[in-house]
Each structure stands twice: as structure tokens, then as C-alpha cells.
Length: 303
Image (cartoon, rainbow, N blue to C red; front, side, top):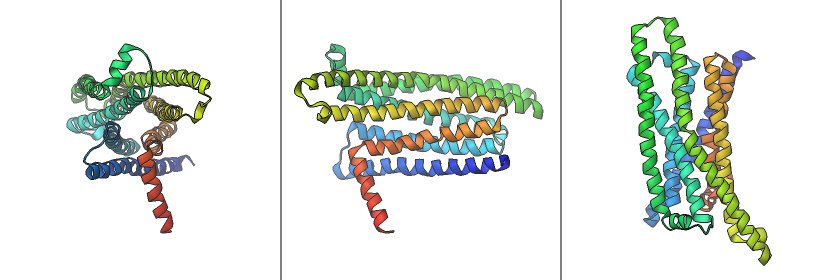
């Protein structure tokens, strides 16, 4: 049974890979068609396009990393190849996480209602705020890449001085965990920002419901529905990314202790996030949901 586990997990990874590419490709395709036909696109649709592209890159990175780890090929990657592999993972994961966080901030500024002058100022300039945050994340990414590059350079210098198999295998595993731990720590900031956005949306919804009780509208009020839809999208992102974060962290630790079964299980769970959340974004967006149902109906009619 244990010998069959790699094949089973590989099939699951491939299925997640296919679903992820289809769902994210669908987001890009529908929004690009809309962009060409209308000659304009809303800020949220532009965010969705870039987010979907970054997730396609992340899904490919997960698949490549899976096969490298499965066949113990990572150790044979050259210095340049190692940098390309790690940097591409950092860049795709960075934009994947930060763009989802920026989407949460966008929903907060567009939907929430607070009387604070600072919040009202940001609400009036939501597009500029999103642009400034995006530019700030590029600085964040730059420092992340510098830190990782220092770790890579240090390991390559030590590897060139001692190229025995025992040294390279054990030291590469330690180096791999160090790099991934650093990348994980850099992921905490956007996750925290998204969580704060979620709490503020909850607080805004609570205040709105208190006002609506006087008018006996409750959950039938359109603004309440907008609040709850935004909360579903944000909380799904938080829960799925938390599972991704924990599964990847545990898989790296299990890799260090050479627990293959736990490693494969956690990697498989981690790959679920970039695939499934994009599908939830489709269902939470009226335009994308309508296009998806139309395509599904046509596919079903041809059966």
C-alpha cells in the first residue's frame, strides 16, 4: 500500500493542477474578452486577471517541485537553475498572496462604512491606495529576494568546498528548509493584513445590521448581501491560505526528518488552495458566475 501512495498523491496533484489551470484560465479569458469588447475593465477585474496569472505560475511551480522532490532531482540543479527555481516560486507566491490581500482591501474600502476621516479619505481614493500598496509590495519582494539570494550564495559556496554525497544531501535539506522558512515568514504580513480587513468587514456588517433592524429589512437589504458576499470571499481566502501555509510548513519539516508520507500528504493539501479559491472567486463574481453557468450548460447540452 505504501508503495502505491506516491502514484495516488501524484494523480491528486495532477487533478488539482488541471482544475487550477482551468479555473484561473477561465478568469483570465472571460475578463480579457470583456476588456476587448468594452474597451475598459474595472479595477477588481484587473486584479482578478493578475491574480489568476500568478496562480497559474504557482500551480506550475507546485507541480515541478513535486516531481523534483519525488525523484530526488533537486540536488542536481545547478546554481543558476536553483536560483531560477526558487526565485520563480517566490515571485509567483508573492503576487498570489499579496494580490488576494489587495482584493480583500478593495472589498473593505468599497463596501465597508465607517465615519473615520482617515477611512473616508482612503475610500475616496481607493484606486490610488491599491496602486500604492501594489508598488509597496514590489519593495517587499525585492528585500525578500535579496535575503533568499544570500542564503543560496552561502549554500553554494559551502557546496563547492565539499561535494561529497552525504554532505550535499543533508546540507541541501537544511538549506531548503531555511529558504522555505524565510519565505513563509514573509507571507505572514499580507495574511495579517487580510485578516484585519476581514475583521473590519465583520464590524461594518454588524453596524449595518443594527441600523437595518430599525427598518425591518435585515438580510433582505442589498447592502447586507454585498457585505456577506465579500465576507465569504475573504474568509474563504483566509481559511484556504491558512491550510496552504500550515501544510507547506509541515511538509518542509517532514522533509527535513525524511517522513515521506506526511510530506506527500501536506504537499497535496497545499496544492488545493490556488486551485479551489479561484473557483470560489468565479462563483462569487456575478459576471464570471454567469459565464461559467453558460459554458457548463452548453457542455451539458452536448452530452
